[in-house]
Image 1 (cartoon, rainbow, N blue to C red):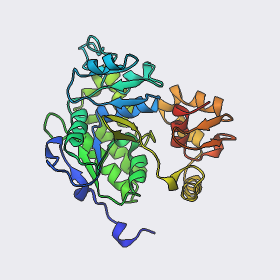
Image 2 (image 1 turned 30 degrees about the horizontal axis):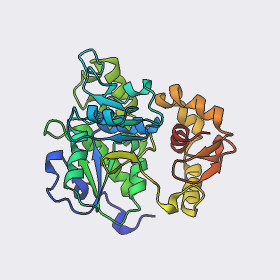
Image 3 (image 1 turned 90 degrees about the vertical axis):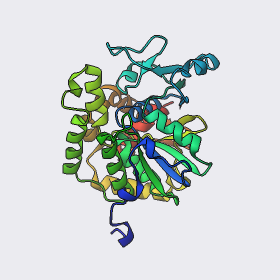
Image 4 (image 1 turned 30 degrees about the vertical axis):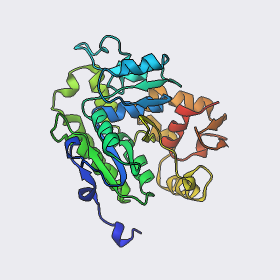
Length: 324
């Protein structure tokens, strides 16, 4: 049962509606940058596919300097009218486009007009007590649970679009706030959020190109499809490290897994309903479930089978980062 002081949604207290509304001197706390279409999801997918980190430059064009200093780096920039990367770039701001590039173990550099600029603004203005994360509907549950344990205020920073409020970013903020306050949305509510996300940029947006259609339907609308939590470290976004009491094998982790086991369907059922998992992850998960797994920066654990982890999101995250 929720405590009385946790039984309401604190979205209004946490919300920063646009990058332009970030204070000149941000107060200490955790700041979650939300750019649902498409910076947040592109960063999440790059890290989920094994990128060493995602460097965020101050300005577009500085990616080339980064690659000059890091010859193995991949860089992201603008796109052409045909939805190809502009000359000199390896990819553009699209989570579905980066599905087809090999980023495993390689550094990446990219920014964007909205989300990248918001990360850079917080990095410039924030003190050492300002922690920056990247969120979206795609990782709403994961980041909400992760930040629920912080003793610091959490601020949900919608990037917006060209200085205006972006509906899709507000949807992300609403979802994350619900998980922060332990008021998870019902499936009916999630379906309503998905409807909003599909048309957030207009009814014809998903018809513009197959890449954008997949960006919206397989990523923006894929609520809770990833466990990946990007966190700013220096100039780059990296995988956030779990608090010590949340590591696999800890008492809290075991308690959560037990609760998940009681309330969720089987991982295989969940994975079959998610198009992103089916094409790229399920074969690898099933093939390797009896192998030793390493979660980067954390302890090892032997997985006797897929049933060892009740939450398929955790299995998918492990599948991306650590099979040996």
